[in-house]
Image 1 (tube, rainbow, N blue to C red):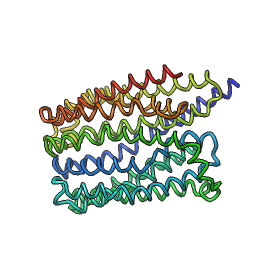
Image 2: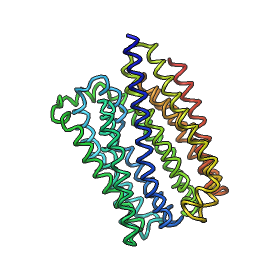
Image 3: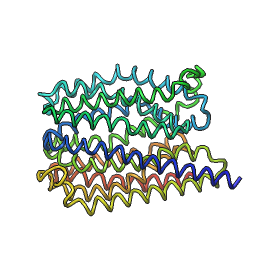
Image 4: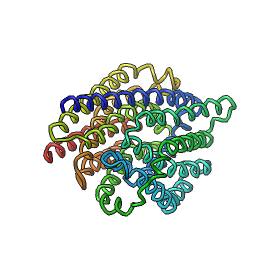
Length: 411
């Protein structure tokens, strides 16, 4: 039995580390495209793009309906449910898009920021259901322990998007509208790939979605609310900065966030593997061991990334983005410290989601969403882009404390 536990831990470490590495590679490829695009668009153009992608990200999480996290936990426990979860994902996201997207489009078309960029708004909103389905289906790969397929899936979107960005720059067509169109094409390609990876499960589904809805509705609802709150905690910040301090300040915040988002997404691979890994543990003692391993790995990667960003902040932004962004160096330093807390918070959320259900999944996500945006709204008029970094750091620090207390009290 001890050999089995040791082998399972080894598989987890290998899967999590390989996904961190592959995701890091894909994000490095994506960062090349982001850097080139930022230099081509300038602070104002980059701020406009950050504004529309933030709106799209919020719509995406709404259209995920919390199914992805449920897939990672319950498909890991019973793989025969994978096909039904996949079909449920598509049906809910498409139906939700028909109701929700018109509201986002109406807001975007009437916003002064995008009055000359109506096609940008339309394309950005149409990306949301594609991304939502994509994310939920990729979570199925983790529940099914198809780790190699998941890693290939990670590389696809960033690689295609970066190639299209380079092509736009070569053709002299690097505008926010064409950039968001390139993003749409890359997500469509990624979606086609992930569908090909689970076509067997879709073909052999149980056709028992009513069982999933009746038995997982409280878990899916809580997961849905928690994920929505998490994306709101970061996606509303550039929108608030753009609305209060202008799109240039939003661009000065968005540039260093490229590094933080890249590192966070890569480190988040640990938490993605954590949920199915802990859900499959045979007893409480083994769960505790797996929890410790997850937190240690998260701390190792997040502190390492934070140190690199903090040390290099003084020169990396001006080198990669141009002298216009040299004033963002201090913003990156503050965000680097916040990276540690948001990474630990994400892993704590996966630990909680692997063992508990209901409102326990929501507490810390609500704290970070409310606190981050409240602080940003208060500070933005005085501190501009720096207000976003301060809000990011403080909110995620408090959220870590809340999640830790929630877990320790209940377990």
